[in-house]
Image (cartoon, rainbow, N blue to C red):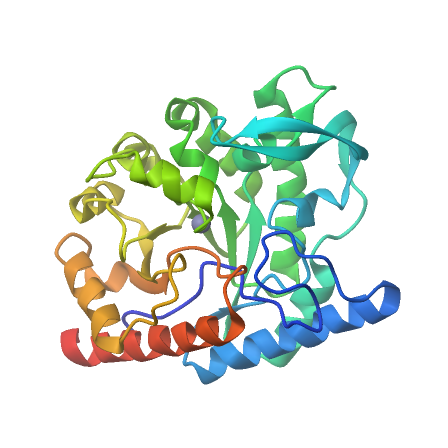
Length: 340
Ligand code: ZN
């Protein structure tokens, strides 16, 4: 089937699970109640995707507070009690980040519960996302390794441990989120791809990397407004990604100023093409979605195109995100009819 549909990763959490419309929401419950509610929300996320006609479904990241810290909570060697302020993403914004104080080790499984629960309740292909090693290293402060690359490689080893276990749980697609890739373009080529290769080592399932210009938060919108009419940062990293062993690349297309002709630099990769904007509340029409797919087809063979969202939808209003899921499913179907 051409143009299968999927999501970049996160979906809004129900208001009974966590505070809505926030990137760092507080949980509404605690202990066993919270653990059970996370799994209930995971089922709901899958049901909503299935009903919208999404082909490769995810857990909607319902079990994690934030896409990076949801992983870090399960890592030993990190001090969460004494966070420090650090400029992240090339000092685009400041965040309070935990500190690496000792050798990094997994405390146990990270996403086993939601992955197995999701696997037991859907027959569709199932995707789980993990933060990428470069993005993690840009979201913690280091007081132990003294070398960013060494620390990133240590995280890559832990990610690989969890990714292998997820594959054994029956996960079909494992995606690493690397928004830091278009901030540190030179480092991507020097060590970023190597770190990803360490994270996917030995996997037989489909692997993906999500790169992007960030969520629709103000710091990112201001930054994007400063980049001019054409965003060409990806030109520097696409050739290295094309040569990598990662199977799929996920990136934004609709309402983005990335010139689509750059996509031809990702020759040989499956592309998860963002056809749903997560930075505004206007719900796309199926015609718009199919239109973006048609534009991308000028540069990418159609059998390599997967219809997706530009980025995670976690901070959106739940009803708008649901309507956008429906538009995604319907738009991919329309594109299939139009371009088959
Ligand atoms: Zn993103």
